[in-house]
Length: 176
Image (cartoon, rainbow, N blue to C red):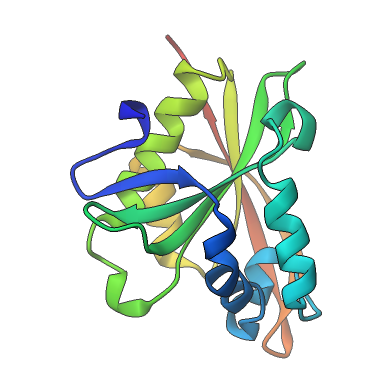
């Protein structure tokens, strides 16, 4: 699909072969605060999730895509539309590039741009939103680059690393 292909990365549907990759990410405690996870996931549960991940976004209310570098099928990250609401034409956005060695390479930026374009042109969404810890400077900069505006701060929203952290709500409203 040309819409989900850039110069550095492309976005693809999750495959059964992504089991180990997704299992590794979901069980990485260092990123649990981002996904509000507190318990590990078994391979069995991940396998079931991957089987159901092929549901249409209108059924699942979520679309999770693998971020892959051009020329390979191997995923380097995941990008999501979640809380998909077709009536109000909005969805949340989440993104993760797994390895630090792949950070600051432009992969996340291109993946987010591709997803935004897809959400507005193919799903006809009116707005996207993101919840970002105010401590997460790379994510704050990434979403700001695409015009997401901070519309509020949830005080002491996330308990992580032994203390409470604020979380900001960002919105991008599509103006054709």
